[in-house]
Amino acid sequence: MNGLAETILEPQAQPNCEPESPLCFRNVCLRFGPRVLLDRISFSLGKGETRILLGLAGMGKSVLLKLANGLMKPDSGEIFLFGQEITSMREQELLPLRRRTGMVFQESALFDSLTVRDNVAWQLMERKMTEAVIDRRVHQALTFVDLDQAFAQYPPSLSGGMRRRVSIARAIIDKPDLILYDSPTGGLDPVTSHTINELVVKERDVYKTASILVTHRLQDAFTMVTHRFDPEANALVPLPHGTFDPNTRFMVLHESHLLFDGTTEDLLRSQDPFLQELLA
Image (cartoon, rainbow, N blue to C red; front, side):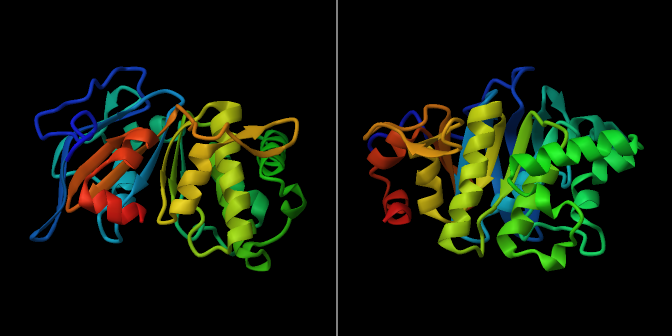
């Protein structure tokens, strides 16, 4: 596999899980019954870095995100969240780390019986913040996703794209240091998908938030690496032709292993047959 020697992680290769790294996996394994879903997964996410996670359906991409914030436990290996090893942590110990981690679930995962305000404010309400502080923080988050007008509405009255934007507002309400996006554009039309991509890149470029983004849409992935957010235009603008965002990299899960972990340039140059087929 020419050109992949530096980007494919061999089983013995171990990342440096530095205290300042938002997330680090070291030899993480997980089985579902007799099936090995994740086998010796190792990588480290740097501050302000974005990883786009690709792979076929059922390869464990969403599971990896749930492992990352302690919603699931691996069978073996170590997971470091902001420098702290979390695999043996109790739920109460995980809470301060989860407050630093935003999660955008598939299909938004909103509470239909709560207003947009209460959906976005859920974790602030759990911490019993004052109503004035909550309202101010919710307005800020909804303004970021251009949806402040939906403050008092209920999720069933919103379009799919608006629900996804509410989910992003909920994820950023605590100004997290890490955001985990699980297929944020899944099931959306191209125009709405572009709006969501714009918000993801805006969070990346304006707040420099580290993130992992799972997607099945290559067009979305390459929009992210070939564009930046321009605050003056309040829109995505293309990078110079042939250049890619240096802080956005790719990972590819395949047959329980991390087949690829590297730059956009390395991915495009790869001669690996699976990666070539994936990109075709």
